[in-house]
Length: 150
Image (cartoon, rainbow, N blue to C red; front, side, top):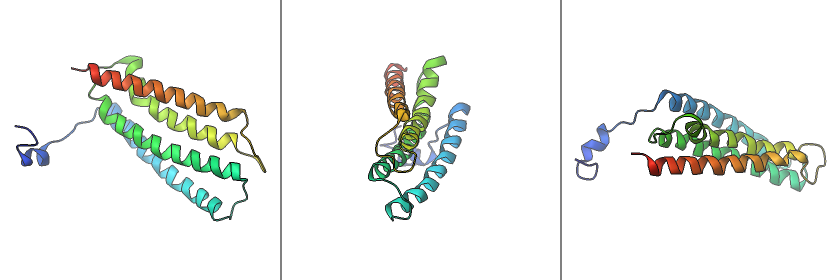
């Protein structure tokens, strides 16, 4: 019987996370609390209570947005990776790669724009590109893992 033909099945259906997914999901949820608190800083910036350049404001917004979205995507990946047959490095990339990119990319935005009066990024902008590369590799790995599972 499917969920479409038996509405009660939807109520009784449960998903079981692996220990690795459950642990990672717990860490990611706690990480989202730090993104929320980072929003307080951003609120100071946009209200003019923190002196920053227009460049720094843009990078603060970009870093904050990337952190939140990528953590939510990483949380979603925890459920999906348990549906693959991946092991070893492929499993790590599928389970943790997006989460690591959620650290690298925002760090690149924040750290490359730090410093009074900065109007362009410093060399730490490379973290944004490293995070983007890891994100692409991780999502590709998970996508292929899901398509080949069975």
